[in-house]
Image 1 (cartoon, rainbow, N blue to C red):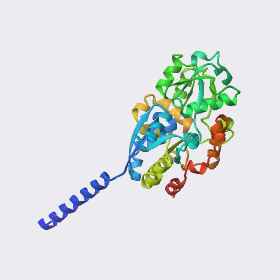
Image 2 (tube, rainbow, N blue to C red):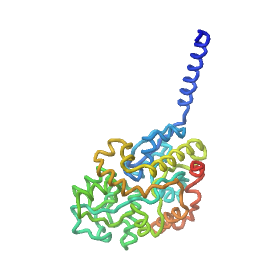
Image 3 (spheres, rainbow, N blue to C red):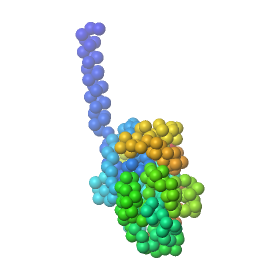
Length: 336
């Protein structure tokens, strides 16, 4: 090769490096708040990060972890984060307060929430009615775990505020609080539920929404769980970022449904999967929970509103326009 050609080749390579480096530097950044990243209900969010799906879709995502969904939501409302990976029901809960929250991709078909009695209190708590006057753990006050508890109390003829709500987080902290008897019961999620059930064979479960059948029994219909949501104003001004994040989650959901629990576990952060056997067992219990296309079922959104309307006079009187609490626009584009 002549020196002239070599110089041209060198210039071309340099230009390519500079252009790709510039493109990467210009990739839009999004701060994603998540309350309890190790929880299997949020697995699609974390797996998308592990698989590099966000960057593949064209967005650089920074994941910031919080104790519960309500604290992750506060980060977005306060402006320190852009998007929440949390439960859709917050969009409905805050609609009467003019917050204008909107979900733009739903990754959980049902919530996966489980009301479990502490191993130390199995003999004295045999029904939801027995929780009156007891200490019940939730991830954080005001989180979806808290909403679930209040709904169950109301449905069983108990004042929704009859139990003392205590924030214990998710995962290891919740398990420790249960085992040490700091709380009488807790609303938990997998893998924590499977860990406890494996250790205590007589573990009492008062309510379970890890399957479609159980969700229908508890809520009387579909009830969507985890989603990516944020202020509608942010979505309107960040269409590219919202589309990229929705596309990343949809790609991840398709990846989930084409791989085994063992293969998925191998991709998750080691800190989440210290006991691989139990993690895989919990994941197998959870797999049917994940959406296949990321779409919000309008019937599911109506079910969430119906549940909140029963326990909140404010929401019952608010005449909420559900069509403003979610959009399938980005998911439809991603599935094409």
